[in-house]
Image (cartoon, rainbow, N blue to C red; front, top):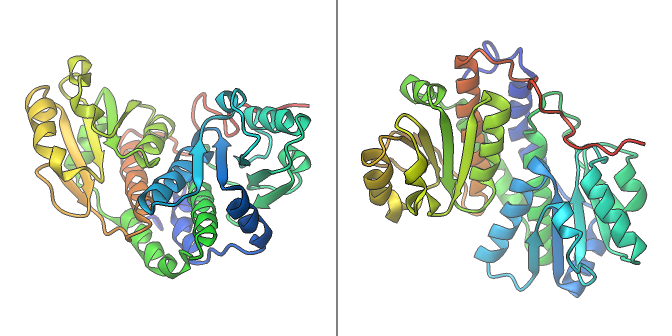
Length: 337
């Protein structure tokens, strides 16, 4: 994908291509007190809406579980979180605009109860969220022009992952240069026309994969970038009954697939339904495969970038304005007044 020529007219593509340097230059400073508080309290709750939560929070939970961290870390949307007892947790609310209604309402509710560990993560200074949080951290990537969030998603995820690494006495800083190169390669990998065409012609695009935020976030991005219906099939859900309502010609994209499930997916979805199955993997699979080279300990960023690449190609194929959705708004549910 040559972003410098054919794609440079779209802010979405320019912002995607800024992501590698954001990763390469990322650092987390001034968080010593927060790190010590997390160690002391031992419970962290990450909330937000849409892209500000799906990959950033679930990537953090995934890596925490993989590493066997004793820290209790969980995530949920802010409306459901308002029903939880969060009194024993440090709460982070992510909102690029700093004015997402659900997050503001939750934070106001917590502050009214005397909660003293409420933090914000935004892409703007001087926001409503910063007014009611105990402290607010501002991303360096800046405000995005395109409706679909990209570079901010990556930086939010880096923020949480590095924060948790510091809690464990380590850091992801040593991975960043290699990770930036990996993401760059994933963004610029040539997508075969056969794959682009099959997705462009599909009625529904399914994403299957781990509950680490990658496949779920790409499901949302499919709506925003390609205007197609999409669904996220968590884990092995793809082979547990949904084939009953799938249609021949639909597409399922396997993100970092479980190798042991590939033959079953072929049997049930490719052979059984007639779906076009595509894999994004670090090795060739039995399906048409987009190869990537993820960095161990930070795999999700590369898979996410590869998914962005695919969706941009499909959007271009369908002659869609990648920057401006017909109905979706940059700030989904903004608190006004």
